Length: 495
Length: 98
Image (cartoon, rainbow over all chains, first blue to last red; front, side, top):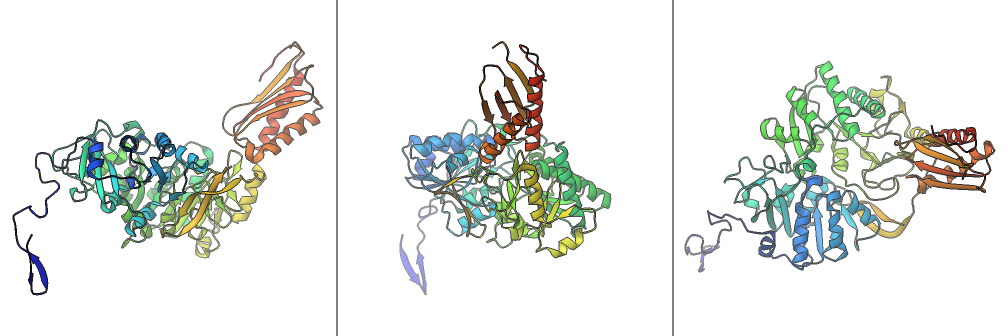
């Protein structure tokens, strides 16, 4: 390459197309396809100590994370940092790679057995727990640096355009994978459904993908998406759902253009059903539903109750089908959804968020990470993001589960700070955060059983008694990062 | 084991508890086995409840098996009392469940 100066600019003389900047996907017939994951890891120059990321849209049906780690272990790679958006019970088999030193630590949500193993002290360094928005923010800020992203792709073409809406392992939205594709140094797509170029409509574009690896299967379909999620018949949960709908109706926000997020949990789903009836009765047409999308959200879109669905994760077959066919049903990235360091995220536009809890305390702090026995079993999801953004955040919980009270003096782990939680709804009473005097005024005299949160706590304890506090060791096994990157709490080893 | 009298009450549904009380001339003192998800948080309370009911009913010797599925104290009380009374109601040599 010859360089010379032209004025203040340093310039280079033309030497022939493709000579100085060879294009990675230049060969038309083959594109970026490599024969095996091992070859892709070799091309990506994976070394000891690197950070490898994954997305969790295949949920408990995922085969890619285990597959990738088996290959890496076979290559003799050690000391890896795993940065999945979330791990599920199917990933329990990773624990042997932790014990053998292939995996050093995890930065990501750990649902089930991997969390339990962390609580028992398996990892030498703490699990870093981030929300959906917080994970992208950390990548954007360079705090979570991903060397290689391995993206499960239900459909891919030879150039690496990726989609989640078709193929045997269709999962719908690929919302959590966008940040990995964007910020990782190297991106490997793994697919069991290689389609003709171009894979339109695609979610992740070829401009971000280095290699495409075809494999036999990336997932177990019946574990990726459920059939139709049924609304619960549990009378206690239905009472809570009905109270949520009343709170929403009287919140002052229940007018044209209303927006909401309610997950796929039993109470949330039932609450959506109640809100749906009230919207029909009042003739209200809302603007959007965001977050995890279910068949019920799709029906509300098709009934004209909402104008659009903003989908970061499609929970059931109806949601997957709708994403492929409904114009008002849009896929969104985790950054678009919840990243506080983006130039605008959806949670800030939400009127109402209905969220779950494993514990709530008298300061309205919410725990979603640890169970009453102190064991780390759940990720944060979008909990702290939506709570911070929504105009009214409603947390739903039965007063007790089994014999464990759910309203306590102090949650074992603060996931979502009380200052962002506005209402706690139980089957026996509704507590409004004293910071929200405006909301309290709206809800008073409307037949809602309003109580002080302290009285709810006492009522719970009258049923259950006061449980002995679980015993913890000194070792910190989990760090709960708030969505802005600060540490909101730590989780200690159970002993 | 001829004069073993057994009373059972409750179920293994969630939030319920299955209590079995075994009275026998051979048993001395109280043998209490508790299997419960609440053991770490409420083990002492559960033991005290069962013992209190046995004392109230004047049962000094028994083998009691508690299989708990997260029952509240009021449920444990009711199931224990019913199981004990069923055991007491059995003529020696017979076995009665619900």
